Length: 256
Ligand SMILES: [Zn+2]
Image (cartoon, rainbow, N blue to C red; front, side, top):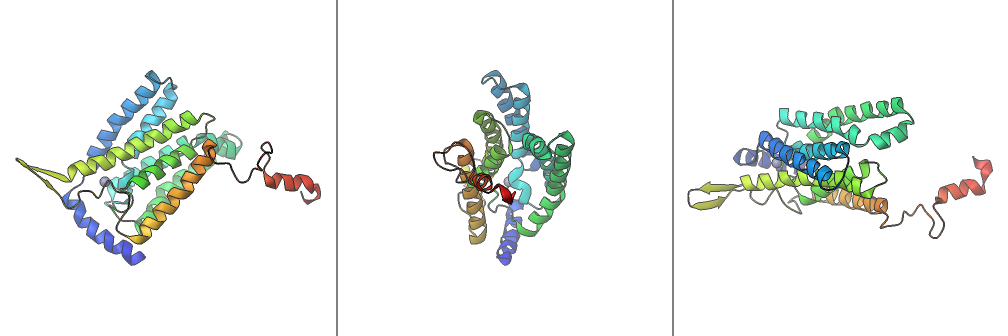
């Protein structure tokens, strides 16, 4: 499994040099999209300016996410820094609930920042490969679903706004990489070797596919439960909204 990762890494590093939109192009492109998305959400769809700004920033940062596995040093560190900073904001509703008060939420925020900033880059350095499954449609859906689940709101539409921003930014990256894989040569258009590798459903390697699709299934399930399309199995059918576990403790109060 790990030799798989290493080998693909070597191949894709060569591919890297041949074609790829650069960090600057991605950050600029998704930045413009973010401004448009955030503005439209406020002016056209009546979201609050705060929601619009957060959605726009998520779009902007998501435009860099696929290159988290590129292992080219500085840009990756920068992306991790941005990601570590924005995730606690996106999750603030949950953090306030978990922490119980603003201080508790701050403690969670600092912990999440450190975990992503340092733990995340360490883990990815060990495992990932550029143009692996990070550059794929299932990875885009995974990122959007994480944003959906991470943003605490009673309004599914507001959660959807955040997820949509992440999905849009992520997709802009894949499209840009794909455009850059087309070489204009006077009258003729030649496809570079990397053509078709950015927007894909399935990678060449077995293990990353399994990991990606397992994650996709778990997060899709959790999202559907969150929307209410699938019933949470922890809740008894027909009974209001009391979890099974709570029933048990109610029936045997001595166990508490
Ligand atoms: Zn890329």
